[in-house]
Image 1: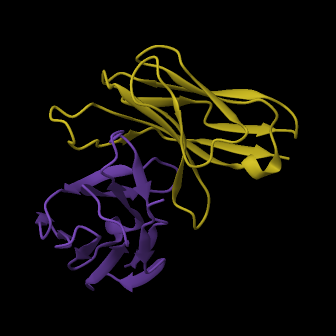
Image 2 (image 1 turned 90 degrees about the horizontal axis):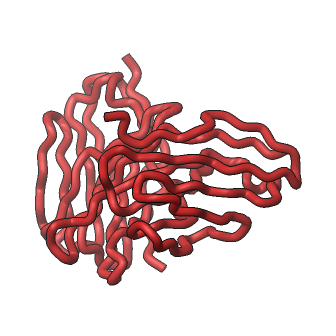
Length: 113
Length: 117
């Protein structure tokens, strides 16, 4: 069973601060995705990283896939209240049924005005 | 496009009652999934259907059954509800990647909030 651990589980910061969320595993993943979920809604895909060492930027969000494809991080610069939500990482394995994802427990981010 | 739709949005059941959660997608996706989400436990896969006509167990299948009715619809049935099945249930779908070993990016519905008393 592949497990993904996210840290921290909860994060409360002030508007304008920077933050980093981590997603770690002892397993190797073929790709890793980050989702954001707002209260009362389903998760929405933010980004997919595929290559070890890959860095992707989405406005103020920077996503990195570890060189060994076992970990990933999400960095938010100058956080805004609109960034508030549950951030989930999800890894795809190398199994033949490549449609399955393993989700981390999530990081609940609150950005206070 | 409505994307992924789920019905009902809320449901309260008594222990032992049965019900079916409905899910439909209009994106012509081949794969569909059912997850449950509980506080501090992320999303756990209950069942999935890689393609029309196939279904497979996920991480927590006990107490549930599924039906892939056609390419669009994937239902989840609780035959005899238990309080441990109180949760938020999400349906998701994904297209089959063009290349083998490609990326399955999942699109989620708004969820069904189920309480079993």
